[in-house]
Image (cartoon, rainbow, N blue to C red; front, side):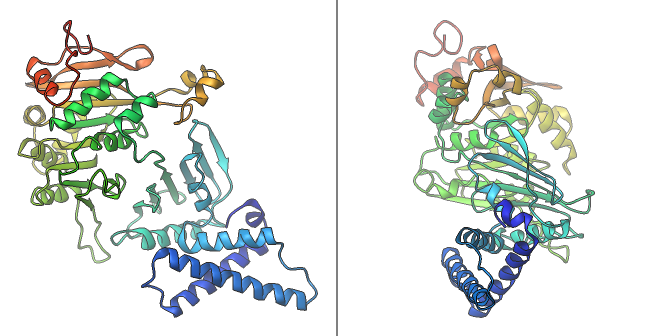
Length: 455
């Protein structure tokens, strides 16, 4: 149901629920499964308008006023959202200024906008049971594979049609909770991120050459720091003739949607066990499977556990140029996070062995941060308006070149380090052999003059 008029009027809420049920029955009886979604939606619109016409005729016969045209249009939108979207949540998902949506029960809804502001929104369901039913219906409608959401499986990760990522839990919280992360910038290249102020041109130059030279890159950062956006931008530097295999917990990268840049892509998504407890296909198994799929590069959307070992093995055993993202609190913290995942894997790899594996697999670590609210608040309105990504900016603060391992430590040069405002500035020089190799793949030949990167 869209708009406060419908939300605040119990009669209108009942009308929308009734129309959703009756139109859904008519669609089922018509056997529209063979139609494209757009055609089914258009048919549902026609059926809803026809039903509203019948209700208006009945109202006139009884001498009562029919719904005003504006309210009829709102009802049609609400019915279509209920049938093909996420009900009242859909209006927030379609709002271009909304970046994140957090639902802590049906009537406690928070939205974070692109400018960093946070505000409370209207309820997205009449009760928590309706909220759960709405999410469950979305799982059945949008999931590429079977996606349960019930007491037996109280968690859900789902990619929505617009590319947003939905995460939901029930049973393990006092009330069902839903979070939606929207990805507004899905087709940006490294040059676009330079224009947005997310990284200096020198960093973009280095990373572009590193991707073309088939260096393995790990992108680290905190939650919502722009890791996926940067990973997409890095992938844009991969030559179109290369075959990519992407691996994700829930589809999010969408490299296969950009056929001009990436005509040969296989997108893999982890699968949970079915109701009988079988059929699970975890991330680690997908990574191993990708190695048998003739991939030029393997790209893991987000490393979350024991898939880190097959990922590192893939990087060091013939899949050069692979990439992934990982949660971390600092650039060097990426190594600690990888080690923590490795020790949890069935192999129980000790720290020294993990560090040797990292040193042999990872070439560069790129670390992202998010501008703190007070920093953005200190800018004038004109400066903020020039930021297409809003008031809070995501930016690269550090780039490490991995050079080896020494017992309990991974050895790495900080080629770019945090400078003023923690933005990346030139740091230690690249190794001579790395510099020579990257120059052969388009790195500015002036780089390295004077001893440091960009000197």
